[in-house]
Image 1 (cartoon, rainbow, N blue to C red):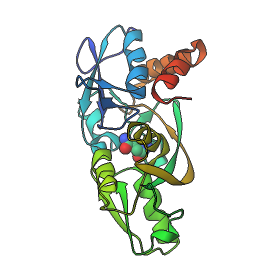
Image 2 (image 1 turned 180 degrees about the vertical axis):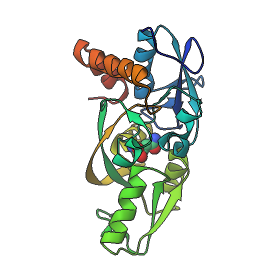
Image 3 (image 1 turned 120 degrees about the vertical axis):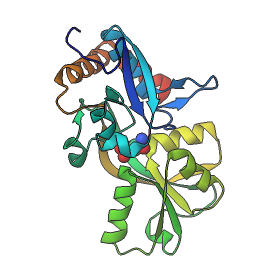
Image 4 (image 1 turned 45 degrees about the vertical axis):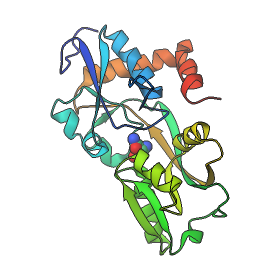
Length: 235
Ligand code: GLN
């Protein structure tokens, strides 16, 4: 993989925003692991370097600021490819399909956004879930109080402690939460936003983007992608 310049030699530096299980989160030893981490490890192996992960707010990732500042080589953050983000980042091929989902505490009878009229609905700041909800509230003239949290942990904590009536985030993230906290919350509704995640590089970094795409393509064809999927996402 000659020709790929890295911000720190011998290392593929990845920007992410923790926690975002099952895509990236700390294990019991404090090591960052997950679906995205495993895929970027393949890119690092291809480049004959190791991956080093930098935890940074999502805003700096999706705006291109972190990549432009040389904070990292690649962004891997369960990040949805959008037209707006494509203006400031170069995205890899899609590596994962996602939708949005509404989660409530088990036992709550909510099934639709309309039923949340006059109530508090939590979202994660800067995400596509937040954008989706704000657009729905506007289009349908809903009287929902949308409350934005700085990360997934804060959003899930608010839901678990009943500070909000419901919360919206990417479906795989709720599925993971339910696995880790059985019986606590349920997915009350899904919103088929047709999202696809992509890894991102600094605009114009075609060499690294090529390596990322090649690693994804190879993993998809040799069964590695399916193994990583089974490990982190499940069936
Ligand atoms: N997929 C969502 C987005 O891109 C959430 C990503 C995240 O919170 N890490 O906005």
